[in-house]
Image 1 (cartoon, rainbow, N blue to C red):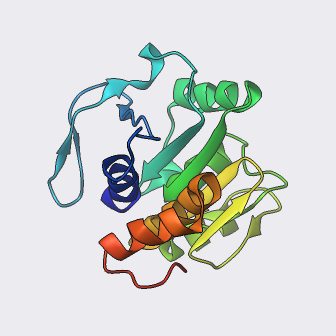
Image 2: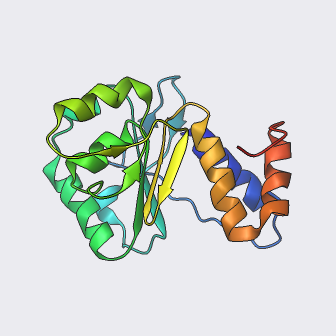
Length: 175
């Protein structure tokens, strides 16, 4: 989560007009706790309007066991309304459970490769840090979200600005 949020925070910090409005959502709207114990204030996913450009699902643990049908339907509604969706780490497994990775190239954290072997479907899984395919944004987790966000920032605001953000993180080149 932090690897995805920090480049956007830095882009906002280095811009006269912050380009990214970040909203953290969760199933319940309660405080979300990372695997490290960091806490994030969130809003319930079903209490917000669909005025997003891009929504990421972040998941660790065992995402193949995720059963919240209302959330999966919400993701499908986002997609139907033209909102891009992405998966970070095991988030791609949840996108697949929602039926949103059919005919899209994607990646996932390597710990979840077997999840796709166990799920029905013909998957276009790539073993890469991140994959952007049309309206699907997926990455492997760990430091890979940092790389994907640099690519998004570069696309949205130019390579020079993205390189400035990359340099801020002592990442001397954008992968």
